Image (tube, rainbow, N blue to C red; front, side, top):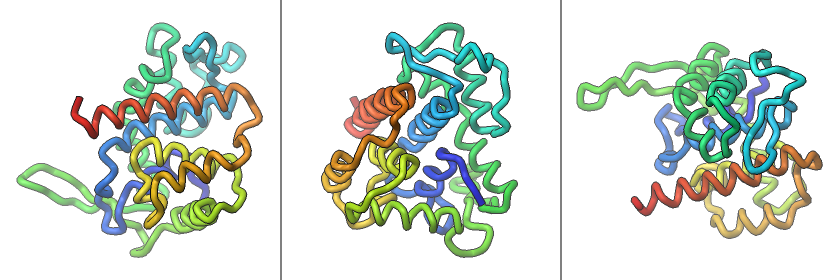
Length: 219
């Protein structure tokens, strides 16, 4: 079963018991970044003058057929003006995690398990098959290969970049130091030959790192 980039990232940010991983505090920003990159790769948005514009040929209301990407497109179009990637991370992340989880539950990848903590509803989302979802297993195999320094595809390179930026290195690369992953990513060829996608990914990465640094330092 195919999953989009945000779904791939979310599966890395959840434990097998259906709870968020210890390092997933800034997962929502990574999910938003994944949506922006995938919309750029689909030709729906572009970066000009440091701001994101909806492509005029596809139109602001054109549907992608993917509820997660359509959510992002609506948020970007509804912002009211061309915005920086950093501004759009906040706009797109609102309600995004629930949408991604709902989609994975609807397609039988995860299941929703009612749970409460101090009377607060905090449902868990374990795998629907009782083990690691097949999509996550395939993704982790590609990330392990990347961690060993093997060549990889643009999607896996992008997912690894977003995971590291969002503070999910320990989840995505168990037992591998962040510095090692960053070095191996830097040694790989440029993942996106299309400038528009490359620029969006670069800006999203920098924005998420800045946000996660503030989150971790409390400043």
